[in-house]
Length: 233
Image 1 (cartoon, one colour):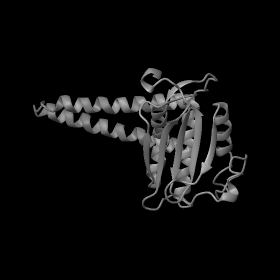
Image 2 (tube, rainbow, N blue to C red):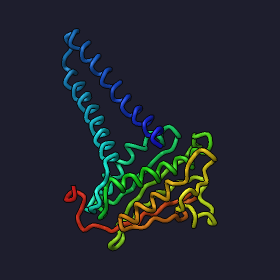
Image 3 (cartoon, rainbow, N blue to C red):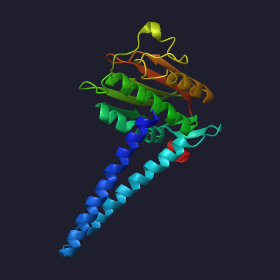
Image 4 (spheres, one colour):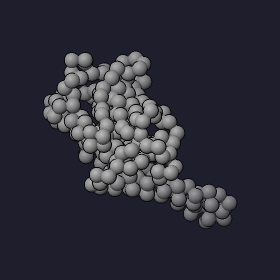
């Protein structure tokens, strides 16, 4: 997982770096030719690339920091966005599309770093299932992340249209060292850790049938917060 994440982060950094170099070279040529009208726009684009790299660095630092035990209102949309910055490249490489449908202003009374770690784990597992042994998904492969408030709870769903999980295995998937991956492809600890962390966050996690088609759907149930995202941030 660390190796895959490192490769993804390297790609995420190399893209804006290459863009910055291209924009800087273009700006230099414009100045040399006395065509400076477009230079401010080029400099703005360079600033945007730097902001993107800065946001990625902050996300990685927060992800690696030892989380505190205190729970507080957290923006679910922001947590999901940060998680996808870390696992999105893995999905892109495998040919898996990720969609999000999160209720505006939705918050959960949780630990944002640990919730981000949970989402990274579950999305990564879904991408692995869709990619199969070859690591390349079939056309149309997708992971859908949705979140809604239900009474005093926040429900987060991570669903894929992959092969799914057989009913007879669902009671075992959160057990340590249980895995359906090929030998050497996984230790069977990811979902066990997810289950443990969700319990620490005073929530539950379970697997259900997707609402549409085939695949698997993991449902995270957490205490809701009465504070909207804008206030929580």
